[in-house]
Amino acid sequence: MTTLRTAFITLLTGIVLFTLVHTSCTSSTGKGMEALFLTDELYTDPPNFGSYPATRDQIQKMIDDVDLGNIRAHAWDLWGSMTSPGPQGLPVWETWYSGYEVFTLAGKQEVKARNIIRDFQSPKQFHHFENVTDGVIPQNLPEQITSFNRYTKSVADFIVSSGLNRAQALDSINDSFDRAGTPISLRQIQTTQDSIDTRAIVLKPVFQFIDGFRPTVIPFWNGISPKTTTDLKNPEPHTWRQGVIVDPTGTMKPGDSALMSVNNEPARWLQVVGLEDFYAIKLTEEDVKEFSDFAATSGDDVGKGNMTDSSSIYQNVKEGNYALLMAVHVTSKEINNWTWQTFWWSPYNNHPFFGADRPTSILAPWDNYNMRTAYWMVTPAGSAEGEPFVSFNPYLETNLFGKVPVKTKTGVLDSISWTGVNSNCMTCHRLAARAPGTFNTPAYQPDGFINIGDSVFAGTTKVDFLWSVAIRPQ
Image (tube, rainbow, N blue to C red; front, side, top):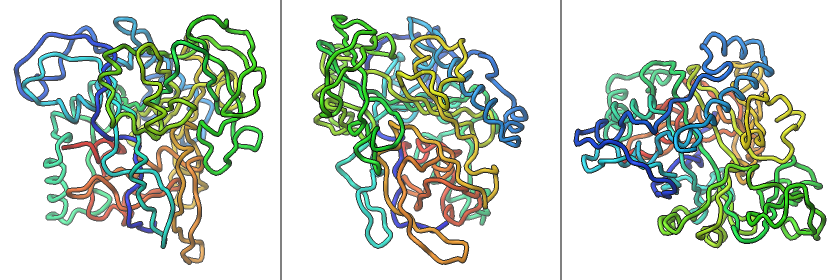
């Protein structure tokens, strides 16, 4: 794979708090883990749910057999586990540890209580690709990404107790690889105690902020065609041509229709859906006060007019407005390469490819989310000559674009255009690596096979598919 002279855009970084729900636990004055990660009645491990957790052999057989049916069934069971009811009316995943806790607060003695926090992030160095010059994908500094992560206790504990949340520790590991002349394929760490940890799950949710005092039209993804988007190259939410109406006031009732416009399209009759069809969070005065400039510079979260710029987001981050969960990336370490599934909200919860196989055990509002999986990079799995397997989330990848140089079968270099709708979760995260004193790997490939011994990893440490471990340590 050809090395580029720029950093890949990551969807996992930054340090900004957005506190929405508060709850405390017994305090401790110890160092490290004791100061932060406490066993209390709030944190809840992902419960058993259908086929989750599965053994490595069970999942590997699905991969070897290209058994998409059972893979999707397992992904739905993982979704059912993490969205199960937890304490204080929260879904289980909301009790998991935030990136802020893992990479910023962990080990500080002054931390005496744990809050449930939504850790919206802004990037330090990875940005969307704006244009390409001489084969280099430059950084578009004004366009930053916000979101937050969630980590189950086992992976959070291991990252902190092993010092993987500290830049000095990671740089020391990389130096030791250099001194020992470690082969590229072995220049890697793991982020869990064992190579397999069925309770290790990492999430990345994305929200849309809407007005709490009047109806809002919310566009929804319905594929890529001139009928569904006004931009076939970068079909972001503000380009989608279909939508539904959400009225938090309750004046419009679910099932009603009203004449409204989607993204400045001519007004037409749109269906009203209930707020209860979403995982919705009503913003308080404190939420608005804690929402920072960094959190507003978003490339994924959606604000007024279905735009992702900071001004549009700020216009909807007001007391009484709502944050609607629109998408979630989910990865679990039930296999060495982690499992990869991504979910997004849709009014068509029986979509023939993405939702019709959802089991009835998935309860509302979680049954309104469709799903893709990416348990391999190429088909057949593990083959450098395999065909790229495309799997993307319309809220997380549709705004990505650029050009990458590739080798043709004759060995000649060529430059191809790519967009986020041609990407693969596992390919992207396989590239997660850290070079000394930096937060990036020096190359990017949107899809296709990545060998663990690829020269692109020379001089770096692969960080077990977790971009947050590559870029968030301080």
